[in-house]
Length: 251
Image 1: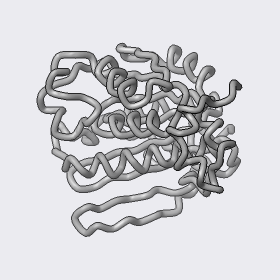
Image 2: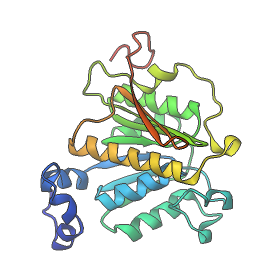
Image 3: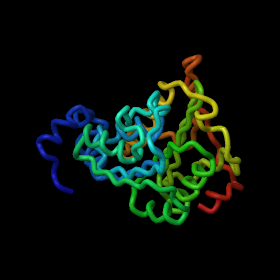
């Protein structure tokens, strides 16, 4: 990998100053390729913070267009982006924040096969989609290809985050928690969500992605982090692996 330029060293100075991260960790971020599933309320802060933090490449996947009702919480998009593909709008915002971060835009709904193919090219997936069908497909593909995954959800005043780390042989996956959950009420279009709740959850998701890429601290694999904004409480729950899970039982 090429050495960092003077402008990059200055840009990431506050990271490099941290002994837990240092220039070695920053180089890992610089060389990382992360797949972003969804550029809505959760994906927006994740993408912006990962770009700002120095992740080298983000592949952005979302087939939706920016709607006026998105702007209350989807901070990667602005008023002038209404009617624009979210991947295009988010890519512009990312480049404005950090031109060193390369972006690839995919504005179509991925099949299981095309998603699996993409995972051979990335180091980690961040899933901020809003339906169980897609979340379970992403989880199963990550387990099959042994790709790290950070998944989050938010609704009303609550949020949750979990991670799948393929290096942990006893760690649970998303399907261990939800099984064959039917497609349903995980989206804010039907239930509403406080704007800042997706910001809190998305920022934690970005933090977990950075930690997993840079080998920083202990990640959330094996746990479910639950956030309740009404009481301003976090709970970290231990998650057991489901021995009958059809996604990870053979891994």
